[in-house]
Length: 100
Image (cartoon, rainbow, N blue to C red; front, top):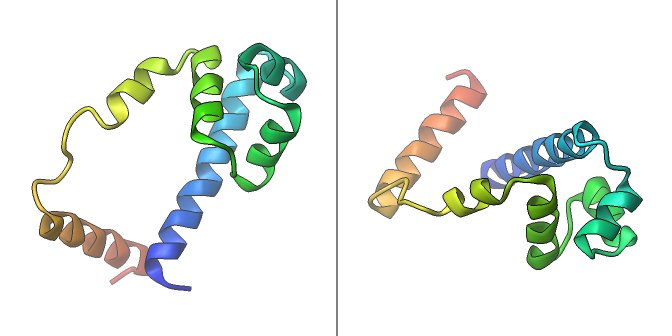
């Protein structure tokens, strides 16, 4: 698997685990959260199983769980000034993963 794909899939699975944990900590079942967020239960189940959901549905879920400020901060500022800076950071990350 290409390093970029490994990185994306690894983050996706961790994100799903954290999302599920936050839902449970808030005391919601999947059905309850889906209903309150006006998202279909099947969409929420699919998201927690394979990580696929529409952006608008994910935003509604975040708002119900109280994470709207985190969404606002997500793209608030530039993390890297240039594409080259981003690529260098990715290379450092992959070297750490591989133990080099």
